[in-house]
Image (cartoon, rainbow, N blue to C red; front, side, top):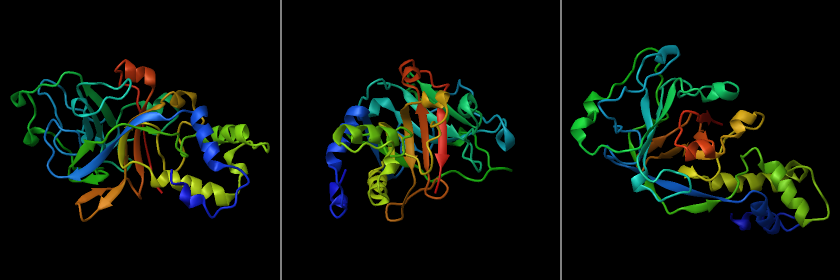
Length: 294
């Protein structure tokens, strides 16, 4: 975090010390950021959009409700773990894919508890063993698509290669539902003037604190902690709170010079979360997929 943004703000406590203590309360987690590059990613590559790796002997993922019932979904992103640095508990081989409907909600399943994790108009598919013989895979011309009634577009245009950066430790983000209380616990361990929540502090401190996390948010990542533009959907639901691991996160990014156009509604974020136990078991049937925008 860039502490320079706080140099003109009067505080009667040591913010840097509090943030170090916050890392003790909820430790940073390993994460991998991706560099997003325009181009023509190959069928086996990690990417956003493009032609998915897909064996001929598998049923292509289709929606289950609304206009997309029985209609093919579209590839949002694909991760080839044989191209990525290793993260604890994540696969070390195979391809993980995220398919979504091109509807007004980008395939999200809003609801309470398990209902919001039902993969009706989105699908997460893991291919543990990669078939290298392209004759056994669907070609670009064979990938089914749907552009009829109810099709309103995807949160991206084109296809983009995802190039993994070296793993880093990501601290708890201010968007995580645990942050206000965790910050208060860290604050109280460092001062003699206890607070109940982060929001007991002056707005002059809270706003730049939140902005500092926003400014450092990855444009695409796995691991670490999630980012949201509004509220964390796990805050009041124990079932959703179990989804504690970022399986994939994609932020909005528009760069005309680089030919990149990824836009989740109005500068939103799309996040896929899974429980650590399901990730270890390679069980991708219970995934929380959430998108929100400003």
